[in-house]
Image (tube, rainbow, N blue to C red; front, side, top):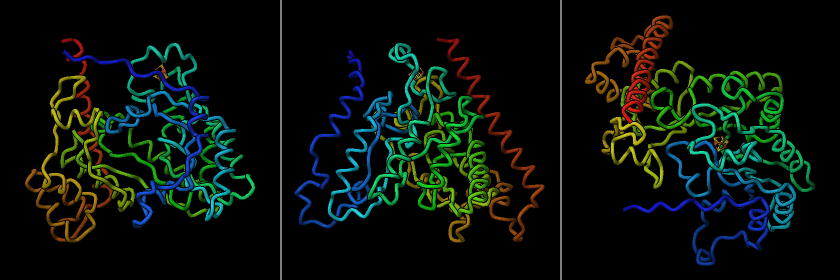
Length: 385
Ligand code: SF4
């Protein structure tokens, strides 16, 4: 028999404020006094947490299990008080390295009807679409950024937490409007250190569905707006996408598609990681069981070091040392055509752009067919239940 206790109710803002107002020393534990500097401490030393919890529900992330799915925000007064305390710290040079939380932009966002939320079993409030009951208004957050950057003794406020850019795009979040545009402008103009890192995670639709992440097309949309803003403001910021390999459901062909799509966009990836199973997540359940617990469907999982290394290599297709292994791998999979698109033909040519586009369209259609297949499967298994 398994007993599942109901989760502890979310804290109130007053309770969270009280916690943050406790007299923390903001120093590493004294046991580290005679040891080399703690790298994580350097990162968080002058950063401020403005809310707890995350309603994103990404399958690979354990934040909701630790902090809850309901976002609980600190009051503006409590945040400003903490910054006043930071200002008094010896060595503080006026630069806050982060003003964020598990996600940068969920501050003060809650369900408009909280009764509905308390009875809601959706693992994510924003996937596959933004819940009608969720307020995604960014105006309080923008106002907070402005208050903080105008404080005496504060020279710069960076936003180091990950930005959920899907919330800012009307094609995904139909409530996104003027307040979200203003937020993006404030973020890009005052709070980016030169590179804005965002996490589309992958390009394959079926894989993004497993991760509970939105379509990669949204990244393209953000990029257009980002570039337009740079041009208008005379800035030279870079948009840096994060990707993940070997996530359950990811096969080598998915990695080849990712490499080809990002190559086509002129990207040479650097911010990448291999999937690590984290306790209490859906992805980890799939990793160990090879099955999607919601549908009972078998999911491909890369488990050996060799498989994981190979998947990771696709990110670095431009590295001459890795290229032969990628070509060989795709040849063995019967997709020498993809190797030609990614690495050029054996004679040193890359298929012309028109041909490459056509091939990429075909790849997209293959991916779509796979997604539709999985949707049909899900519908079928629902009917079976
Ligand atoms: S009702 Fe909507 S906003 Fe509330 S918890 Fe459920 S999905 Fe999230």
